[in-house]
Length: 130
Image (cartoon, rainbow, N blue to C red; front, side, top):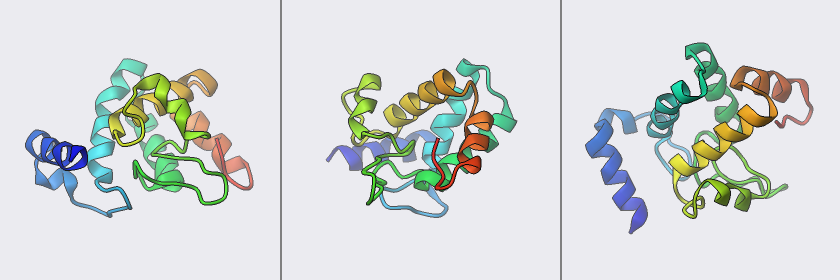
C-alpha cells in the first residue's frame, strides 16, 4: 500500500540508517526528522531551532504520523487538534509525515514564530500543549 511505498521511498532516498532509532507507532521518526531538517531553511530556522522542534515533537508524538491522543483526539506528528486541520497542507495529511510536518511548521511559524518559542510555551503549560 501507500505506507509501504513511502517506506521504500525513504529507504531509497535516505538509506536504511535513517530508519533506525526508537520506533513509535506509525514508524520512522528519524526519517521524519530528516524531512523536517530539510524544511528548516525555508523558515529561516537554524540548528538550535531544529533541536527545539525535535524535543517538542518527541514529547507530543514521538514523531509518529499516526500518533493519536486518546483524550483530546489530537493527531499526527504535530498533534493537530482536530487532525483534519492538516488538510490545508495536503489531502494526504492522514498518513504522510511530510504533509504533517509542513502543516506543523506553518502552525509554529504563524503562532509562535519559531520552534524554540513554541517549545518554551509547551513546557510552561500544564498539561503541556502548544
